[in-house]
Image: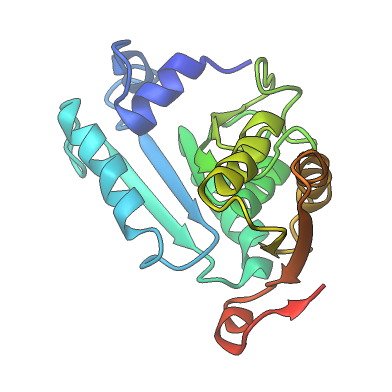
Length: 215
């Protein structure tokens, strides 16, 4: 099982535990972090810079104390397994997965390299990527905004702000395996609030440009 505090210190600079132990894995070795990105680099630019800033705040200078390898699928998800395998082949010390599809791809190619997801709105438990949110197990850790309470709360807040609302449109990607369990939780919450849900499929970026079609 991975040392999650050490991994999160590396990726986020968010905790006090020192990262020097990773650097000491081999004499003179510079730790390498792999960024695996599902979407485009421009989409994730702010998050990438935030991670780099966190590392700088911890005293790690890129190119000197730490190396970062970036691989982006640029929205072509079929490329992700190959890119994940490439990072694993480089023997990076940790993989940061930007997007649930990147997480799934990274998990499919390594069970030993620590994998961190900065944040996801998907359910990694339903996808079989972790054992539970409280005790993920294996080599995956990170943060998620998914949860039955959170999903219900979003609808509650909407109803509070707009008491007269009766129908709610939801943009969904059926290709995301966490869609089904997420939607079930939303339906339960919606019924308790006398709301009906209308899912609209958005499988690709072009679907947003054209206007989503009812599922």
